[in-house]
Image 1 (tube, one colour):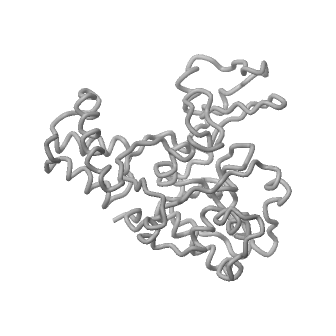
Image 2 (tube, rainbow, N blue to C red):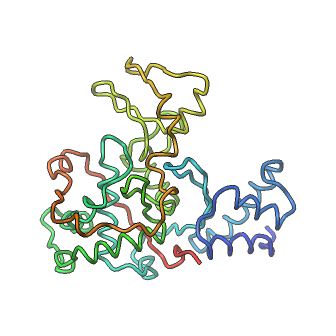
Image 3 (cartoon, rainbow, N blue to C red):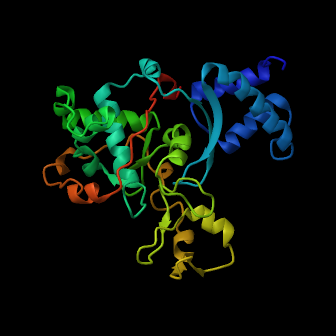
Length: 303
């Protein structure tokens, strides 16, 4: 195989320097450097990405696309595929900060309503004790002093950094959801672990519509429903329960869409004293999902 040329290098460098790009922006850049429209020359586009990924595989990187479940848009980015201890050396986040991100991630995934978000107050009140046991796979693991001393101010600062780096993202109602970098980097992890999936596209259903049928765990992404049932206003779930989704599709993108709120949204410190952490019992009842080896690297910061 011939080596990568300047056009491939331009695409890689753009994603590394700018961070994840919307599909339209990435397609426009591809058209600019190759003279081919990906929509009209799909094979040329696919072949270029395949060639890039064969070369990037040597250094454990991959150029991949994913759909942001909050706005339904496709994004492209370059991600690190290594999950061993050495890969952590490139992170700018401390161990307690990574543990805090994992705690937020767990809380969002364990939400049986599939709202795909956690309130800022609940996030700030998350405890890191459980993360120590998950890291060591020991329920009686010693909780590091750095975890115990991780203050509200440090959590608030970490939230803002994770939002800025697009690992997390604020929603229009003031909650915290996953950022596009999380969807890109954890795409394979979602698939290989016990994360409920959408019954239409089979991708992880973090932000989704849930069947109201008793004991039914069927989930659909709103955009999947919209694409599959454009002319319908209702349908029946596989469990037999009626599924009315027209109102959800009409409001798609207005509720829980992180793109409609500034990324530097602030958590309100004055609300903390009257806040109540997300119920411990509900978190214990939720299925325990093993935290992934999260790679929060410097390259995730946008230029």
